[in-house]
Length: 115
Length: 113
Image (cartoon, rainbow over all chains, first blue to last red; front, top):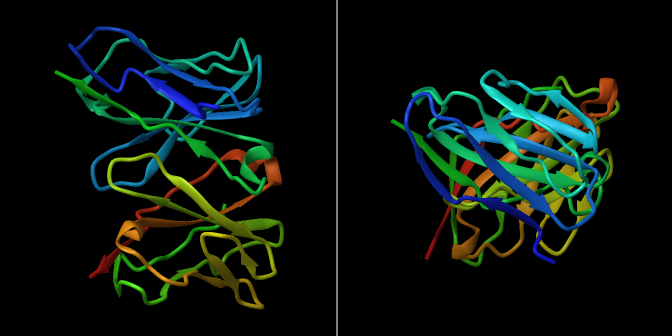
């Protein structure tokens, strides 16, 4: 049981490049989310999904796309990277929207720098 | 979702109880109180959650006031490894918001030897 796995752990992009941040969970969780965390700030919700084939926008969705073709995977795509997207990205998953006794399980993060 | 207010930082001596307060005066009847913590550079970790009653698990206790406008997270015997930012989050299930966690800046708890 690996929990929530994020790849890569570190990435440097040039402005305008595109890339996909991978997130996979092996706990059969229905809910999955992507957050970003800027220095000294709390986490902000980018996109979320309540099940395969269903996604919706969070607080800061601009510049990002998601899809949920399987229960296990929830990739985050940066369409055209900008320096403002330099951040640490966390993926999270849960049963029942985090209301189980285990809450949300977070991955270890992807540290992205856009130059 | 209701907003929360937490002190920006607190100190605690190792081995003593750490009591972290949270105000959520605008909480509504169907909203839960959640606590997560984030140890430096790691992903947040779920600690505990509750609706009305006090809750306890292997990590901590959660005390919610009778009017539900504030709560306290208690770490009974703090260790150096409990040094982290602690987030108090209120989230309900109205309008499908039960899967959205809104993180504030939290409380930086420093446990001192």
